Amino acid sequence: MLEEERIIQTPTSDPPIGEQKASGKERVLTYIVASSILLLDLLTKLVVEDRLRINENYVPIESLEPFFKITHVSNTGAAFGLFPSGSKVIMVIAVIVSIVIIVYNQKLPANHKLFRLALGLQLGGALGNLLSRIRIGHVTDFLDFGPWPVSNVADISIVLGTILLGLLMILEKEEESLPDDEISSGDPAENERGETNEESPVIWNE
Image (cartoon, rainbow, N blue to C red; front, side, top):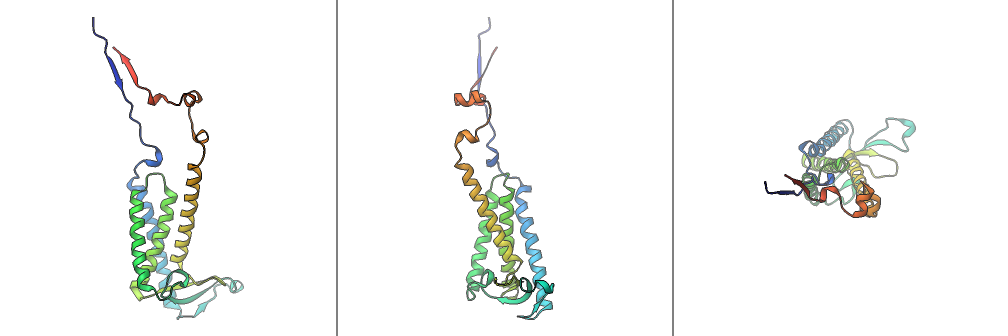
């Protein structure tokens, strides 16, 4: 008579979707967005610098002149003309911010495309203005929206990325604060027992 043997296996489950390691394709999304913003920002600045003198403006649509026109402005400060005398400090901050974004993007788990989009917008904007300071010693602003400070593609990108990132963080905190019974799923009987089939050992008899 063969002796009865019990083989107990402890199941191994994959980590939650939000904690899975991101693939290279997911990480590269941030750099694709950043590169696109950087290229668009550079091209538009070069066109403005070539076509308009400092403080000269161009009105593409006359009826919209009170609300929008293109005005060539030299900016040695931060976005929207803030801190005009802090060019070197702003360059250092831009480098630090860019490094932080790159490191965060590498560590961000899978399935966070909107987060990576926000990071790409911020990274592209930061590098766009940094490149301008290295290239000509100041930032070229030209998007003149009425009473608002004159800006550029990089500035707008940074603002949009910051807003998107803020909204995503708020939504994430709201999801974390939901009661467990609202986010739990599966067999109601399993939820009442407080356990699942995966947590119970599987036993085979030979």
